[in-house]
Length: 169
Image (tube, rainbow, N blue to C red):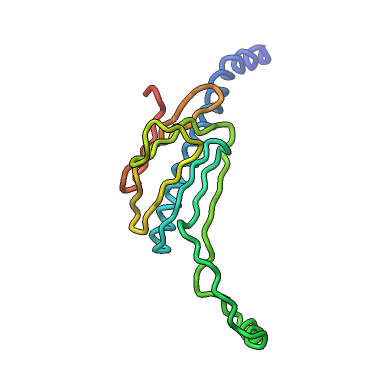
């Protein structure tokens, strides 16, 4: 009798569990896009440097990097100076190291990307959103789709405030 009750309970609960797992993958994919945008905005403000958020449909990745990476300073020190410099445990450069982040979306894909002030009607495999050092960016919208066809839409306005909604709601 106990086994029969457990069997029936499992059969009833299984569709809900599968649906929950499917929805979780889509939410994690959308959250990855949102968090990458938040990270780009935060780094742009903290470092007082424009940052880029690159959304790549082909590689299914989201990446954050500085807009312009400064070239390394020319090596004008002699070997004797570099030895004494190394002994002081001081950093080799006063500039902070470049901040980069790349995340691959698992079990979901970037369906479409629309960035304001970009030619409409052009279907490209990637888009770059610039987060300025004041925390602002061009508004953009990203659609993330799972393998079952469910879609979440991430809309980010000019002050980098994200809104996430499931398509069809």
